[in-house]
Amino acid sequence: MKRAEKYDKVLRILALYFFKKENLKMDSFETINMADVPTKSVEYLWKPFLPIGTVSFLSGEGGLGKSFFTLAVAAAVTRGALLPGELKAPPPADVIIQNAENPLPTVVKPRLEMLGADCTKIHVISENDKRLTLTDERLEAAIQHHHAAFVILDPIQAFLGNLSMNRAESVRPALTHLERVAERNHCAILIVGHLSKARASAQHRALGSVDIINAIPSALFLGKVEGYDKDIRVVAHGKSNFSELAQSQMFRLSKEKGFEWLGGCNATADEVTAHIRSSRSTRTEEAVDFIQDLVVENAMLATEIEELAAEIGISERTLKRAKKLAGVKSERVNGHWQWSID
Image (cartoon, rainbow, N blue to C red; front, side):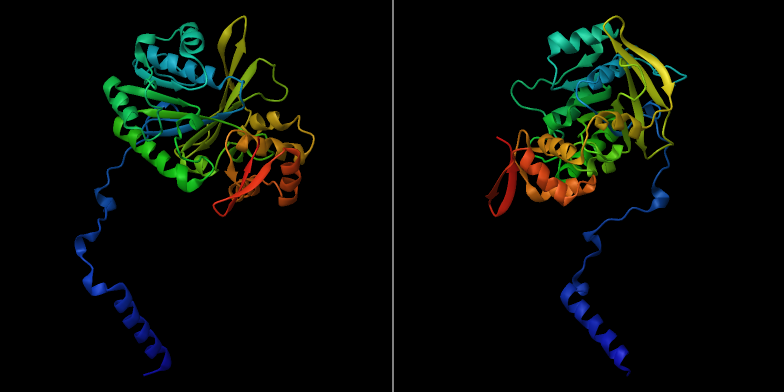
Protein backbone atom coordinates (compact mmCIF):
# COMPACT_ATOMS: atom_id res chain seq x y z
CA MET A 1 0.00 0.00 0.00
CA LYS A 2 1.34 3.42 -0.95
CA ARG A 3 2.12 6.00 1.74
CA ALA A 4 -0.69 8.34 0.54
CA GLU A 5 -3.24 5.51 0.72
CA LYS A 6 -2.08 4.60 4.25
CA TYR A 7 -2.42 8.26 5.25
CA ASP A 8 -5.99 8.45 3.89
CA LYS A 9 -6.93 5.25 5.70
CA VAL A 10 -5.63 6.61 9.00
CA LEU A 11 -7.62 9.82 8.54
CA ARG A 12 -10.82 7.88 7.89
CA ILE A 13 -10.28 5.78 11.01
CA LEU A 14 -9.66 8.89 13.11
CA ALA A 15 -12.77 10.57 11.70
CA LEU A 16 -14.90 7.55 12.59
CA TYR A 17 -13.44 7.50 16.09
CA PHE A 18 -13.73 11.17 16.96
CA PHE A 19 -17.06 11.90 15.33
CA LYS A 20 -18.62 8.51 16.21
CA LYS A 21 -20.23 8.16 12.81
CA GLU A 22 -21.67 4.79 13.75
CA ASN A 23 -23.79 6.38 16.51
CA LEU A 24 -25.45 9.10 14.40
CA LYS A 25 -29.24 8.84 14.28
CA MET A 26 -31.05 9.58 11.07
CA ASP A 27 -33.75 11.50 12.98
CA SER A 28 -31.26 13.92 14.52
CA PHE A 29 -31.66 16.40 11.65
CA GLU A 30 -34.23 17.56 9.15
CA THR A 31 -33.79 18.65 5.56
CA ILE A 32 -36.14 20.42 3.17
CA ASN A 33 -36.32 19.25 -0.40
CA MET A 34 -36.52 22.23 -2.76
CA ALA A 35 -39.02 20.35 -4.92
CA ASP A 36 -41.48 20.66 -2.01
CA VAL A 37 -40.96 24.42 -1.56
CA PRO A 38 -43.79 26.41 -3.18
CA THR A 39 -42.74 29.31 -5.38
CA LYS A 40 -44.27 32.62 -4.35
CA SER A 41 -44.14 36.09 -5.84
CA VAL A 42 -43.29 39.04 -3.63
CA GLU A 43 -46.19 41.24 -2.55
CA TYR A 44 -45.80 44.87 -1.53
CA LEU A 45 -47.47 47.38 0.72
CA TRP A 46 -45.73 50.06 -1.38
CA LYS A 47 -43.92 48.67 -4.40
CA PRO A 48 -40.98 48.17 -4.27
CA PHE A 49 -40.11 50.13 -1.11
CA LEU A 50 -42.07 48.11 1.47
CA PRO A 51 -42.35 44.37 0.74
CA ILE A 52 -44.95 42.36 2.66
CA GLY A 53 -43.83 39.46 4.83
CA THR A 54 -40.48 40.94 5.76
CA VAL A 55 -38.71 43.91 7.37
CA SER A 56 -37.58 47.17 5.75
CA PHE A 57 -35.25 49.80 7.18
CA LEU A 58 -35.43 53.59 6.93
CA SER A 59 -32.38 55.68 7.87
CA GLY A 60 -32.05 59.44 8.07
CA GLU A 61 -30.58 62.34 9.95
CA GLY A 62 -32.56 63.52 12.97
CA GLY A 63 -34.99 66.37 12.42
CA LEU A 64 -35.39 65.93 8.66
CA GLY A 65 -38.81 64.29 8.62
CA LYS A 66 -38.42 60.52 9.07
CA SER A 67 -41.34 60.30 11.49
CA PHE A 68 -43.47 62.59 9.31
CA PHE A 69 -42.76 60.35 6.33
CA THR A 70 -43.66 57.13 8.19
CA LEU A 71 -46.89 58.70 9.43
CA ALA A 72 -47.76 59.82 5.89
CA VAL A 73 -47.38 56.23 4.67
CA ALA A 74 -49.41 54.97 7.64
CA ALA A 75 -52.17 57.50 6.93
CA ALA A 76 -52.36 56.35 3.31
CA VAL A 77 -52.61 52.70 4.41
CA THR A 78 -55.54 53.44 6.74
CA ARG A 79 -57.43 55.20 3.92
CA GLY A 80 -56.53 52.75 1.18
CA ALA A 81 -54.96 55.67 -0.68
CA LEU A 82 -52.45 55.44 -3.51
CA LEU A 83 -48.81 55.91 -2.57
CA PRO A 84 -46.45 57.54 -5.12
CA GLY A 85 -45.86 55.33 -8.15
CA GLU A 86 -48.69 52.91 -7.37
CA LEU A 87 -51.46 52.30 -9.92
CA LYS A 88 -53.99 50.35 -7.87
CA ALA A 89 -55.23 51.45 -4.45
CA PRO A 90 -55.30 48.69 -1.79
CA PRO A 91 -58.20 48.28 0.65
CA PRO A 92 -57.90 50.31 3.89
CA ALA A 93 -55.95 48.47 6.58
CA ASP A 94 -54.90 48.80 10.21
CA VAL A 95 -51.50 50.02 11.33
CA ILE A 96 -49.43 49.67 14.52
CA ILE A 97 -47.21 52.65 15.32
CA GLN A 98 -44.57 52.53 18.06
CA ASN A 99 -42.93 55.96 18.10
CA ALA A 100 -40.58 56.40 21.05
CA GLU A 101 -39.35 59.89 20.15
CA ASN A 102 -42.58 61.91 19.84
CA PRO A 103 -45.46 62.19 22.35
CA LEU A 104 -48.74 60.77 21.09
CA PRO A 105 -51.18 63.57 22.05
CA THR A 106 -49.09 66.60 21.02
CA VAL A 107 -47.14 65.34 18.00
CA VAL A 108 -48.20 61.96 16.60
CA LYS A 109 -52.01 62.41 16.77
CA PRO A 110 -52.05 65.97 15.33
CA ARG A 111 -49.79 64.91 12.45
CA LEU A 112 -51.98 61.90 11.67
CA GLU A 113 -55.07 64.11 11.62
CA MET A 114 -53.33 66.63 9.36
CA LEU A 115 -52.37 63.78 7.01
CA GLY A 116 -55.98 62.59 6.84
CA ALA A 117 -55.44 59.28 8.63
CA ASP A 118 -58.34 57.14 9.81
CA CYS A 119 -57.21 57.08 13.44
CA THR A 120 -59.64 54.28 14.29
CA LYS A 121 -57.31 52.02 12.32
CA ILE A 122 -54.11 53.08 14.10
CA HIS A 123 -53.01 51.33 17.28
CA VAL A 124 -50.20 51.70 19.81
CA ILE A 125 -49.04 48.93 22.14
CA SER A 126 -49.00 50.32 25.68
CA GLU A 127 -45.58 50.43 27.32
CA ASN A 128 -46.79 51.71 30.68
CA ASP A 129 -45.81 48.52 32.51
CA LYS A 130 -43.11 47.11 30.23
CA ARG A 131 -40.95 48.43 27.40
CA LEU A 132 -41.54 46.81 24.02
CA THR A 133 -38.64 45.02 22.31
CA LEU A 134 -38.08 43.57 18.84
CA THR A 135 -38.71 40.05 20.17
CA ASP A 136 -41.64 40.92 22.47
CA GLU A 137 -44.57 38.51 22.10
CA ARG A 138 -47.00 41.43 22.45
CA LEU A 139 -45.98 42.72 19.04
CA GLU A 140 -47.18 39.64 17.15
CA ALA A 141 -50.26 39.38 19.37
CA ALA A 142 -51.24 42.96 18.50
CA ILE A 143 -50.62 42.40 14.79
CA GLN A 144 -52.89 39.35 14.83
CA HIS A 145 -55.59 41.00 16.94
CA HIS A 146 -55.88 44.06 14.68
CA HIS A 147 -54.98 42.28 11.41
CA ALA A 148 -52.38 45.03 10.95
CA ALA A 149 -50.89 45.38 7.47
CA PHE A 150 -48.16 47.83 8.49
CA VAL A 151 -45.98 48.16 11.60
CA ILE A 152 -43.63 51.05 12.40
CA LEU A 153 -40.88 50.82 15.04
CA ASP A 154 -39.30 54.26 15.44
CA PRO A 155 -36.40 54.33 16.30
CA ILE A 156 -34.83 50.87 16.47
CA GLN A 157 -32.65 51.89 19.45
CA ALA A 158 -35.74 52.17 21.65
CA PHE A 159 -36.73 48.54 21.06
CA LEU A 160 -33.42 46.72 21.42
CA GLY A 161 -33.72 45.91 25.13
CA ASN A 162 -30.38 44.42 26.17
CA LEU A 163 -29.23 43.90 22.57
CA SER A 164 -26.41 45.90 21.01
CA MET A 165 -27.12 47.27 17.53
CA ASN A 166 -23.37 47.55 17.04
CA ARG A 167 -22.82 43.78 17.22
CA ALA A 168 -23.99 41.59 14.37
CA GLU A 169 -24.33 38.46 16.53
CA SER A 170 -26.58 40.41 18.87
CA VAL A 171 -28.98 42.15 16.52
CA ARG A 172 -29.28 39.68 13.64
CA PRO A 173 -31.27 37.00 15.58
CA ALA A 174 -33.75 39.70 16.64
CA LEU A 175 -34.16 40.88 13.05
CA THR A 176 -34.63 37.28 11.90
CA HIS A 177 -37.36 36.85 14.52
CA LEU A 178 -39.03 40.07 13.36
CA GLU A 179 -38.92 38.86 9.76
CA ARG A 180 -40.65 35.61 10.76
CA VAL A 181 -43.37 37.63 12.51
CA ALA A 182 -43.93 39.66 9.33
CA GLU A 183 -43.99 36.50 7.21
CA ARG A 184 -46.45 34.64 9.45
CA ASN A 185 -48.82 37.59 9.62
CA HIS A 186 -48.52 38.83 6.03
CA CYS A 187 -47.59 42.38 7.02
CA ALA A 188 -44.85 44.90 6.29
CA ILE A 189 -42.63 45.99 9.18
CA LEU A 190 -40.57 49.19 8.96
CA ILE A 191 -37.84 49.95 11.47
CA VAL A 192 -36.38 53.44 11.61
CA GLY A 193 -32.82 54.43 12.49
CA HIS A 194 -30.45 57.36 12.48
CA LEU A 195 -27.46 58.07 10.28
CA SER A 196 -23.95 58.67 11.51
CA LYS A 197 -22.06 61.71 10.25
CA ALA A 198 -19.08 59.72 9.00
CA ARG A 199 -17.97 59.90 5.36
CA ALA A 200 -19.06 56.64 3.76
CA SER A 201 -21.53 55.13 1.30
CA ALA A 202 -25.19 55.15 2.27
CA GLN A 203 -25.25 51.53 3.41
CA HIS A 204 -22.38 52.23 5.82
CA ARG A 205 -23.92 55.40 7.24
CA ALA A 206 -26.68 53.79 9.34
CA LEU A 207 -25.84 53.75 13.03
CA GLY A 208 -24.95 50.30 14.29
CA SER A 209 -23.48 47.27 12.61
CA VAL A 210 -23.58 47.21 8.82
CA ASP A 211 -25.07 43.76 9.36
CA ILE A 212 -28.41 45.46 10.04
CA ILE A 213 -28.55 46.66 6.45
CA ASN A 214 -27.17 43.33 5.21
CA ALA A 215 -29.91 41.41 7.02
CA ILE A 216 -32.81 43.48 5.69
CA PRO A 217 -34.08 43.13 2.09
CA SER A 218 -35.20 46.73 1.54
CA ALA A 219 -33.35 49.82 2.80
CA LEU A 220 -34.52 53.43 2.40
CA PHE A 221 -32.57 56.62 3.04
CA LEU A 222 -34.23 59.96 3.76
CA GLY A 223 -32.69 63.42 3.70
CA LYS A 224 -31.95 66.56 1.74
CA VAL A 225 -30.12 66.72 -1.58
CA GLU A 226 -27.65 69.41 -2.62
CA GLY A 227 -29.27 71.91 -5.00
CA TYR A 228 -32.86 71.10 -4.03
CA ASP A 229 -35.15 73.55 -2.22
CA LYS A 230 -34.57 73.60 1.56
CA ASP A 231 -38.09 72.28 2.26
CA ILE A 232 -37.73 69.27 -0.05
CA ARG A 233 -36.85 65.83 1.31
CA VAL A 234 -35.92 62.80 -0.76
CA VAL A 235 -36.56 59.14 0.04
CA ALA A 236 -34.05 57.04 -1.89
CA HIS A 237 -34.10 53.27 -2.33
CA GLY A 238 -30.62 52.14 -1.32
CA LYS A 239 -31.03 48.37 -1.30
CA SER A 240 -33.52 45.79 -2.61
CA ASN A 241 -33.26 42.02 -2.62
CA PHE A 242 -36.46 41.55 -4.61
CA SER A 243 -36.35 44.07 -7.43
CA GLU A 244 -34.40 46.84 -9.10
CA LEU A 245 -33.99 49.99 -7.03
CA ALA A 246 -37.01 52.26 -7.35
CA GLN A 247 -36.95 55.87 -8.45
CA SER A 248 -36.49 58.17 -5.46
CA GLN A 249 -39.55 60.02 -4.19
CA MET A 250 -39.70 63.65 -3.05
CA PHE A 251 -41.92 65.33 -0.50
CA ARG A 252 -42.13 68.82 0.95
CA LEU A 253 -42.36 69.79 4.60
CA SER A 254 -43.44 73.38 5.11
CA LYS A 255 -45.41 75.45 7.62
CA GLU A 256 -47.80 76.60 4.93
CA LYS A 257 -48.75 73.24 3.36
CA GLY A 258 -47.46 70.71 5.87
CA PHE A 259 -46.67 67.43 4.10
CA GLU A 260 -46.92 67.22 0.30
CA TRP A 261 -45.79 64.48 -2.10
CA LEU A 262 -43.90 65.95 -5.07
CA GLY A 263 -43.20 62.95 -7.31
CA GLY A 264 -40.08 61.14 -8.42
CA CYS A 265 -36.51 62.30 -8.92
CA ASN A 266 -33.15 60.79 -9.89
CA ALA A 267 -31.26 61.46 -6.64
CA THR A 268 -29.44 58.40 -5.29
CA ALA A 269 -29.07 57.13 -1.73
CA ASP A 270 -25.43 58.26 -1.70
CA GLU A 271 -26.48 61.76 -2.79
CA VAL A 272 -29.06 61.89 0.00
CA THR A 273 -26.53 60.92 2.66
CA ALA A 274 -23.74 63.03 1.10
CA HIS A 275 -25.65 66.24 1.84
CA ILE A 276 -25.40 65.60 5.58
CA ARG A 277 -21.66 65.22 5.58
CA SER A 278 -20.92 67.97 3.04
CA SER A 279 -20.51 70.61 5.74
CA ARG A 280 -17.84 68.65 7.60
CA SER A 281 -14.37 70.03 6.88
CA THR A 282 -12.11 67.20 8.00
CA ARG A 283 -12.11 63.46 8.46
CA THR A 284 -11.20 63.96 12.12
CA GLU A 285 -14.34 66.03 12.74
CA GLU A 286 -16.42 63.32 11.11
CA ALA A 287 -14.73 60.71 13.28
CA VAL A 288 -15.53 62.79 16.38
CA ASP A 289 -19.21 62.81 15.37
CA PHE A 290 -19.03 59.06 14.71
CA ILE A 291 -17.67 58.36 18.21
CA GLN A 292 -20.15 60.67 19.91
CA ASP A 293 -23.06 59.06 18.07
CA LEU A 294 -22.01 55.67 19.43
CA VAL A 295 -21.09 56.37 23.06
CA VAL A 296 -22.97 59.52 24.02
CA GLU A 297 -25.46 57.48 26.10
CA ASN A 298 -23.78 54.14 26.86
CA ALA A 299 -20.24 52.85 27.12
CA MET A 300 -19.10 50.61 24.28
CA LEU A 301 -16.26 48.15 23.76
CA ALA A 302 -13.25 49.74 22.09
CA THR A 303 -12.88 46.76 19.75
CA GLU A 304 -16.45 47.20 18.49
CA ILE A 305 -15.90 50.90 17.80
CA GLU A 306 -12.67 50.12 15.93
CA GLU A 307 -14.42 47.48 13.80
CA LEU A 308 -17.29 49.83 12.91
CA ALA A 309 -14.83 52.63 12.12
CA ALA A 310 -12.89 50.34 9.78
CA GLU A 311 -16.15 49.38 8.01
CA ILE A 312 -16.80 53.00 7.03
CA GLY A 313 -13.21 53.87 6.19
CA ILE A 314 -12.03 55.72 9.32
CA SER A 315 -8.36 54.93 9.81
CA GLU A 316 -6.89 53.88 13.14
CA ARG A 317 -4.82 57.06 13.29
CA THR A 318 -7.83 59.31 12.65
CA LEU A 319 -9.86 57.41 15.25
CA LYS A 320 -7.19 57.98 17.90
CA ARG A 321 -7.11 61.72 17.20
CA ALA A 322 -10.89 61.89 17.29
CA LYS A 323 -10.99 59.96 20.56
CA LYS A 324 -9.02 62.71 22.30
CA LEU A 325 -11.08 65.52 20.77
CA ALA A 326 -14.36 63.80 21.71
CA GLY A 327 -13.33 63.62 25.36
CA VAL A 328 -13.56 59.86 25.51
CA LYS A 329 -12.89 58.13 28.81
CA SER A 330 -11.25 54.72 28.40
CA GLU A 331 -11.34 52.13 31.18
CA ARG A 332 -10.84 48.39 31.51
CA VAL A 333 -13.96 46.48 32.53
CA ASN A 334 -13.93 42.68 32.94
CA GLY A 335 -10.73 42.46 30.92
CA HIS A 336 -11.98 44.59 28.01
CA TRP A 337 -11.39 48.27 27.19
CA GLN A 338 -14.54 50.40 27.07
CA TRP A 339 -15.04 53.94 25.77
CA SER A 340 -17.51 56.36 27.32
CA ILE A 341 -18.26 60.08 27.43
CA ASP A 342 -19.25 61.70 30.71
